[in-house]
Length: 67
Image 1 (cartoon, rainbow, N blue to C red):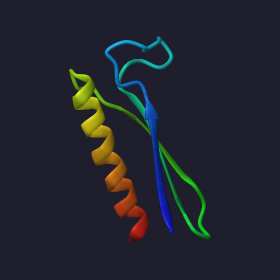
Image 2 (image 1 turned 180 degrees about the vertical axis):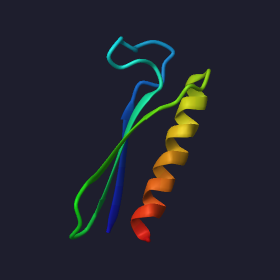
Image 3 (image 1 turned 120 degrees about the vertical axis):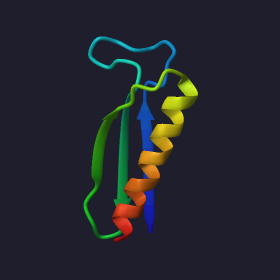
């Protein structure tokens, strides 16, 4: 039992000074373990680039939870 959640600002709009475009939060949870949270900032130039980088980071976080 493993879960992942992603939220953030992929752009092109919606960014603020405190949360600029490229800011992404990833959380993973595993049964009987504590929740893990990571904050990332991706400097990709497109919305799709930020989304791809976020998915890759989320998959890595899941792999890390399995080991």
